[in-house]
Length: 64
Image (cartoon, rainbow, N blue to C red; front, side, top):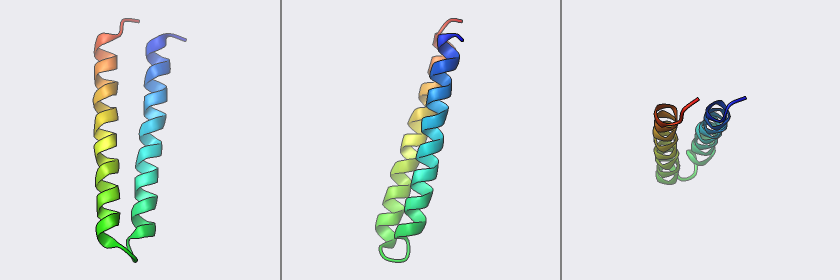
């Protein structure tokens, strides 16, 4: 297995964990503290965007 596929797979798994974690945290925190729930979901979204950019640049710059 080449390096590019391994790195992309790990980043995809981290992205999935970030999406799931922020969605779960949003729905758990929403009834008690709606602003905190929105903040946590927003920060999760920023992490997902950053990981997406990392995947893009890894695919663009790493050679097979």
